[in-house]
Amino acid sequence: MAKRIDVSGLSAYYGTFRAIDDISMTIEPRSVTAFIGPSGCGKSTFLRTLNRMHEVVPGARVEGKVLLDDENLYGSGVDPVSVRRTVGMVFQRPNPFPTMSIYDNVAAGLRLNGIRKKGELDSIVEKSLKGANLWNEVKDRLNKPGSGLSGGQQQRLCIARAIAVEPQVLLMDEPCSALDPISTLAIEDLIGELKTQFTIVIVTHNMQQAARVSDRTAFFNLAAVGQPGKLIEIDETERIFSNPTVQATEDYISGRFG
Amino acid sequence: MTTTAPPPTAPPQKTRTVTRPGDRIFSGLSRGSGIFLLVVMAAIAIFLTYRAVQAISKDHGNFLTTFEWNASLNPPVFGVAVLAYGTVVSSIIAMLIAVPIAVGIALFITHYAPRRLGGPIAYVIDLLAAVPSIVYGLWGALFLVPHLRGLNLWLDKYFGWTYIFHKQDPNSAPRSLFTVGILLAIMILPIITNVSREVIRQVPRMHEEAALALGATRWEVIRLSVLPFARSGIISASMLGLGRALGETMAVATVLSASPQLSGHILDPLGGTFSQNIVAKFGEADEFGRDALIASGLVLFIITLLVNGAARIIIQRRKEYSGANA
Image (cartoon, chains in turn red, blue):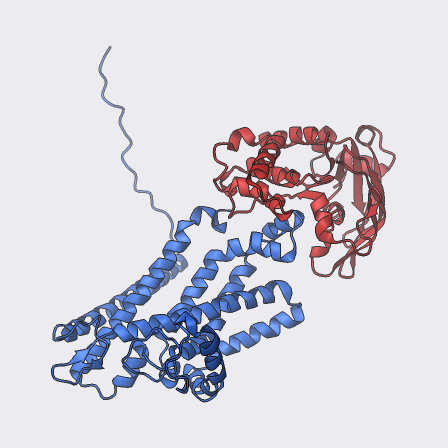
């Protein structure tokens, strides 16, 4: 259920502005890969190229290849809609559908995939909410609106919604940046459990978080404002935080800039 | 153990907060505007009720169920049954046509049209709102009426069995409630479109991205995120349009061939509306006749209030699920 991601020579543009330049990396299945780097270095943009969400912004385009196992996401004739059904995403701010109940939020993706049978939906919704460590908190109020939950619960609801459709990869764009430390811990624990089933890629500004949850870490940087972001290095998280190869990485993680 | 007097409470201090002249002036102005609105509404309601009571108290028939309107007879005969029916039916027809088209246009401008096309379309819609209603009336009478003859015959032929679309005299001119409804639909299209477009623009990007990231197509994004979020705003927009349709005068008076008959066949050139009746009868009415017309205006006022109240209830009922507490 988890697939390897192989990126080669990937650049992304907003209009004529090149936001990220020539990025190549391999992301192993059933692992957590963290992207760190200063604001504006293109790590979120890069993340959004992995499920073709980048191109929903008017004028945005992508060059290069992203292979999911052996299938190029940017190959001709590939439907971005079906790519997004295989590569799930969790956003910076929790965004459950405000007009839907907790149950309907989790079931939304399943219904898009044509699953309508009540029994089948019930069991997948329960499984997904359990998978997101939210079931015990919401099982008595599945028909209440999702927007009534706390921020941390809403974010776990969004994770439940994303994993309900059993994606190959789960992308997380700063999933804890709007949450308090306790909710953050709950999400981090959850990430540790989810990586046994999914390939997880997480963007974070919190370096301790990257060190805690990830197996590998990629450091992005940009030469100056207005310049494209580049991948500086990617390695085992332990190595990045103890003995990075590149000086800029060490400067960044030790807080000397950024 | 000794009893002690309760600890002396500090004397309540009058705290004076600093208010600045700018704040005071602005709050005075906005409060004044709010009060002004209430005073105007109250003045209209009192005027309508006072004059209406004068007429209705001398009425010999039943005001609400009489068809005929002839206040100059002795004893006077006037009733609002035909007018209420015509007003409501023509407005319903207008809403059935206008709301889906308006929401469609709003979605097209915001989600489908390339930016080069969306701007001009929005501009044309604004122009449509600026056309005076008498111009719509003339266009309706001179263009729409002759050109709707074919559609009328077609509807009568294939949908006559529905009773609604049966035409008693196939050769009569289509100066009917149906034609009025179509004309009203065109007139209320701009306001519904513009308000809906603004509401749809307000849908937060993150809700649309939530649907996109689940693998929703463009239509599914609209169904999952956009329409539920914009729903109450679209209802409000429709109510604004309905308010205009209920009260529209000149366009109806120019197109409709009025007669005091109540017919379920909407293609028949029969019936009337409140405003059309007032504008047709006001000129030749005596003092008493005017009071009677004002009484009919009061009924229209009440119908409008009821419709707005119903819309509020619809919006309120699902407030818990509205986008407002996202």
